Image (cartoon, rainbow, N blue to C red):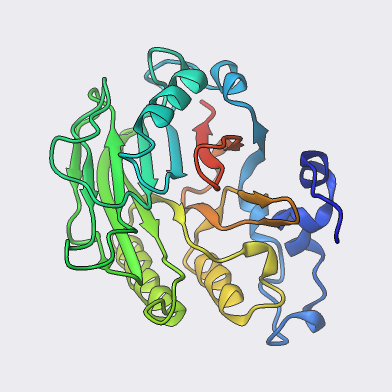
Length: 295
């Protein structure tokens, strides 16, 4: 049996770092024989991604109105994990939550008025119909001091294939689109080609409108396997071609003998200086991911 994977390995070994893998990959070893890019797109970003215990985030993210702070978690049922979720936020940010927007994937079933978070607007969410599998679904919390528009035109929701919800806020005197996306991977309904095509249409719409955007969620595509899996390569290359760069570059789902980067956060904001992080939690079998721009 293989040795257990340690956090130290995740932090230091190149095989667990998307930036190092992408910079040093031999194009002849790619699954389709094509290189992703001539020069690493990560040079467009000034970003660091590492692991944090909840208590460490308090010192990293200030409680002010200047920076933008996002958090996303696959909670595998928000109602059933509600107390643990609220406790995690307190452990991470204290009584006054620092995160401006919180995305939830695998929300499961939900009804209006449930799971309301102090200091935030009422939960915006999209879930599958009661006649369908009650898993999946996406939600988004927005702090009370942020005015927002629910972008239903961008909130593509194809059950079991592409599930998303998007909002638009004003940030840094510009409009910013923020979306939570979930890609189920349960056959036979899950279809990566439809997912990639839907994402392409979505990003194309965003770019035509010349909007800045951050897209976050559980995509169930291991970015560390882009050189060996054609459809993951297609997904990553498509994001690059549309001007979206991944902010999370280390594994987000850890088992004793595997580590996968399946929870993603992409942005098309050029030249932003930021910290992105992976929040260590046992609330579900996914770690949380977060973004903090540095003013």
